[in-house]
Length: 258
Image (cartoon, rainbow, N blue to C red):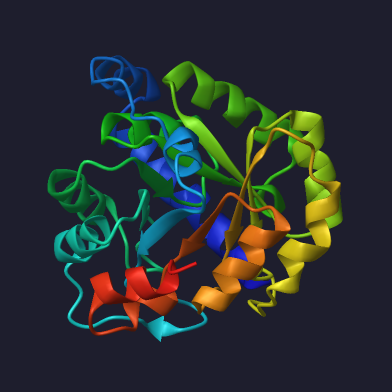
């Protein structure tokens, strides 16, 4: 069992317990009474190169990334430096995230937010809407295409955008069949956790026109961002590189100085 399979297996058990505590119908009713989500892809498209800045405490590959870790202060620094959206890790066991972090960030900034989670069930879609997300992550490698299709439809019902993550040509073909409008190309192989920026550049020619494109993982410099922008990407998702810098706001400005 690779790390992604282990995470998904544990996540199914976790969400099974959540569904027992709160029925998805109850969650849906409450979620639909919340304000309409802020536009996500549109916010990224307003800039020459959009930035989704990530709030993440740790990862299986990197261990603890930032200590002390104060989600609200991190998000405020990102926002002050011009980030266009904030991503918050939801998985607690492997990434040290959770709902409390998301809510702290939601209260601290007014930017669109990504519910960065290993989504396996509609319960998570409605939970994302309830706590103030604009978009949810769906990972092509995590689920069969039929289940992904159902979750995309559920997200539409919830008024949420989907960042559909791929990392190879086969997964990109699934994205085409599902007619997704926002694609994230992950430069990190979620089965091995190895990272190469060329993953984005190799897949880029096969992406349909009109899709908003985000490059994820392994982005460490303004040169990387410039290279991706010149190739035709619309945005980047960056967490670890920024979180390892002492001055977060300066790190954002330096990274996006294209």
